[in-house]
Image (cartoon, rainbow, N blue to C red):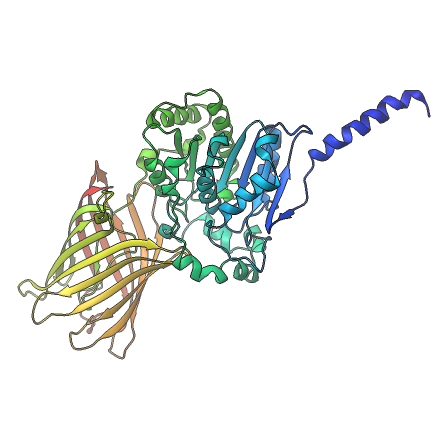
Length: 537
């Protein structure tokens, strides 16, 4: 062999192991934990980002292909954990626990299978949606909390049972279209992912990332779509508020309806560029900032850095505007049943009144929903009376609600008891607000339309639009009684609007009945009202 070729052959042989380290590895399995571990150098001393996908996502989805490519370009290695029952990855012996068991899986992977903390000079965590819930709890674990450099939680829920989706938005189009999301999760695979674990999720999974945040030692970035159609942005705001006063934590909201990973492939180029710019700024910021500063100082400095470097066309949404609009109490004057949206009214004290175009009116006083950490924050109560057909005030009622989100896939949010005070209207009703994916529904039982008849009613509420600033929301409502009394069906649309001044709000609302619930067709289809909400939070 010509000696001139020997240096080239030797260099090629030496380069081959390093080349292999930089290539995309096949999916590996360890104790039914599916993962991909990819390094950018043969010595494995590069910074590492541990990624946990959201629901239906996995490392081969287009979003993570793009993310891996970007991380490589920045010199970061990546470890992508695919929790069992995610997208293409499912195991018939494992049920989906909505992030409860997956934290232990990630611990086993990082501490037993792959000594990542020894092989990399720094380790960052990045999770999307339910994956963000997993990394927040993982980062707070005593075994590894001191080893984590930083945490990025994208579209994290502050409590799984408090997710309250809205039906309009790009995220919903992506979920039910023939795009990659549907290809990732056929109905059969969804059955492996969700249905076997429904009972467990409903009864057992009460964990909330909000309890983990103060225990995290590493800096935390909460990134959210301001108008996220699935997990509303006030979830991240609540997580931020739960942080310690001197905790290194920041909250950035992007002006989009798109949820979690979908921002990488279903938004425009400006959104994608801003997403990566925020992540890049975060990595750089944590190398030189003072992590012992106050939470507000840390957040303001990072937010100003992001806005200064990248904010085309107002993509960064003002976090201080994110709020939740109080929900006035609905009431059908004819069936005389209280009906409230499943989320608790966040106003401490409300005065409400509604009137039909025929002059019938109903008035409410509601109290509860305090910011207290005591048990009283779970209770709400109120009182109502009506004035119908020119008569004196009548139909006096009181109500009492217990609000406590339980479960995940299917969950109960509020249990209400309604009691008629007057002798001629002495009736009682039990009402349960539940949620299922993007649907809120309410089951009512008792003397709903007549004190002499016990009956069941089901009430469906579809929240359609609810912006991040809480200025208005719009939805539709359908209810049905399960008996033969006439006019058993009701279908309506409602719209609430009200500006917020400090912690108070004056709010107007209207409702139009497409199907009249009244016993005669002369009753009004329209109801309008006004609410004064004090001490919102």
